[in-house]
Amino acid sequence: MTLSKQHLALLTLGLAALAIAPSLLKTYGLYLLTLWLVYIIAALGLNLTVGYAGLKSLCHAGFMGVGAYTVAILMKAGVSFWLATPVAISLCFVLGLLIGFPALRVQLHYLGFATLGFNLLLMLFFRNEEWLTGGTFGIQNIKRPELFGFSFNGNLAFYYLALVITVVSAALLAYLLRSPWGRAFAALRDNPIRAESTGVNITAYTLMSFAIGAAYAGLAGALFAPLVNFIEPAPFGLGMSLLFLMMVVVGGSGKFYGPVLGSAIALLLPEYLRFAKDWYLAIFGFAVVAMMIWLPGGLLSIRERWLLHKAKTASDKTATNAGAV
Image (cartoon, rainbow, N blue to C red; front, side):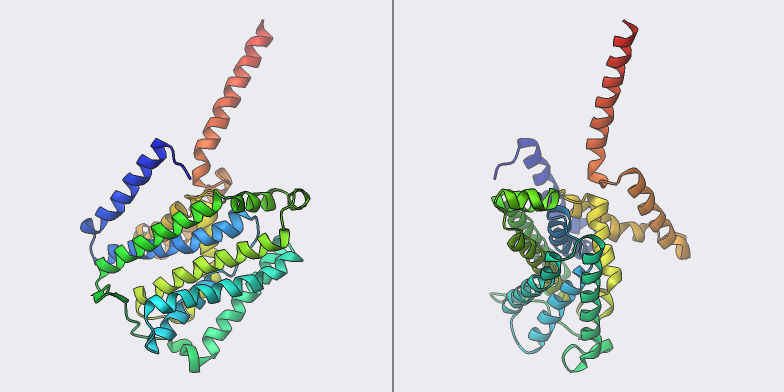
């Protein structure tokens, strides 16, 4: 996997900014920045399912909830975070495989309704199985991890832990997308029939797109639980699944850095609009709708639209000059 010098320079600059940013922020700002990293991990997984494989999913928050509850329950039982997290990821991977089976028979909005039903099922489980999840009372006092005697209990230490995990997760996904798997996912999205005729195993790649996306959501949930120290069913409902989908679409569906930008907007823009009090959600919603009208490809499609506009203008000018001659 090779990167251009410009890409590598921008990536290095971005990572340096993330490393320095905590020194410029107060406690709440650092919390939001850490939460943004958690959302990036979840949105990267959904972008694989929705943006690269072209499938519909409205149960991503449910997978994140599975990861969060798994880590919280196991850590309460005395299991280390470093052992609980792989269990959470594996469980979400298996659940992703299961929810991928409806995608083999239904597509488009029918698949969206199937995944929506799965998210509601998980929500009912989180809420009603009080013996395991604590129900509406949730699970409290979730400790932050330790590694070789070093505690990540401090906000700054946990931020850097989340940053390292986010970077590693993004690098693994980038490697996957640049491999033949990534090309197979793109073929599945563009034309499943043609992809199958070229030897792509539609069944396997459909299931794997859901499973890997769910595994990323599980990892995000594993970080979310110790970050907030308390979990209950509300953050893992349909509203959060729609928010994750919005992160992918707003940033740029099928573009690697789309979830990074989309999650920043979904998390930070409402914070900056709170001066509007009761109107801030309405303003936020209107801004998102307006952007989807003018930029249906997401914010990262601005450059493509500008180049297309420039080429069209040049073509019209050439045609006008030719007509004048």
